[in-house]
Image (cartoon, rainbow, N blue to C red; front, side):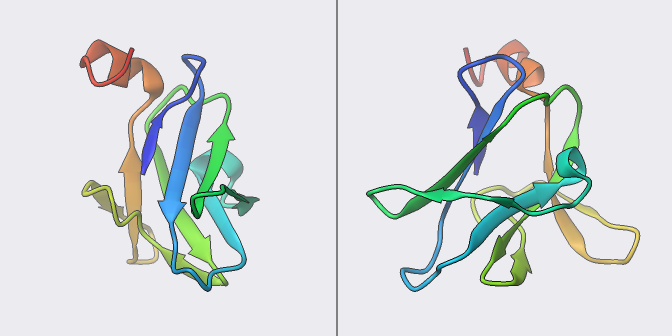
Length: 101
């Protein structure tokens, strides 16, 4: 799942992974597909805020080495290699659509 972060150009990603998950990352066009480690919160949710989000972006989560689409988001795009990527919109579009403030 993703939502607008505290600042207009940031996005906060979150994932509730299996309780046994140890290494959870988010990756996408915003990081040139380099996995960015997520931090496990006390409630078991993994989170990561990413700055500089100004356009539409593709992303995936990496859980203990397995790349997965966002289970809480239903917008996808087919990648050049034929796999599905989750598709996100910029925070400013979320604000304009009334989804976020």
